Image (cartoon, rainbow, N blue to C red; front, side, top):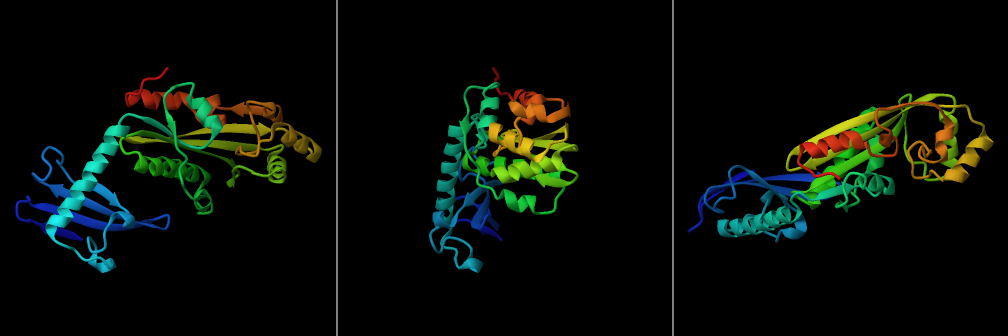
Length: 284
């Protein structure tokens, strides 16, 4: 809905309120076009996100149980929220954040930069994997969701999100989590070709940049005892496809085709370095 208000002593502004549900949380997006309310701040519409805990009953949304109070109170709330958002942006501007809990991606990123923050995004990965999308689309969607989830918490920062999965003839294989599942994944891939898809999303003041690296792998034939012995040795329970290429897992393969070996380990550094340099990041 769109409301126009002009309170005594307060310049005219246009407030557009939209409701969005994400991950079972209600967000109220307020777009404010204002002329003179905050000099030098607004040249166009600005989007602010309010959670219910940030809103006093009666401030917004009569259709959802809230009624609009006086324009001056609405303007005061928007001004306060805007200043908080601006301060967050100033604090985070230019900071690099890895949106991942993976220790492998953290160690890989250290090859390019020494100063970055790590935040683990809260996204429902299984829901996306069960959505019926093609494997490449699933990987890209998850990378985007991870990056944007963290970007909302750190406005102004440069956020890197990534996701990796195995595409075995259209079937998605993720992290096994258990030794039994890891052995079964290896036996399913034994003697066959599969694709390892590593998607990356970089968000920041520049906008959104996405890319995906595809690695082709041909696994040799394996027996049950050999698969079990490998899993016991490398413990690849947190690796998509149940193998560690950088460790004993290299012995499982007959052939590998990739443009960037680091993509297999979780983060394609060559293309990522190119993206970061293009948006002004200083690399080692």
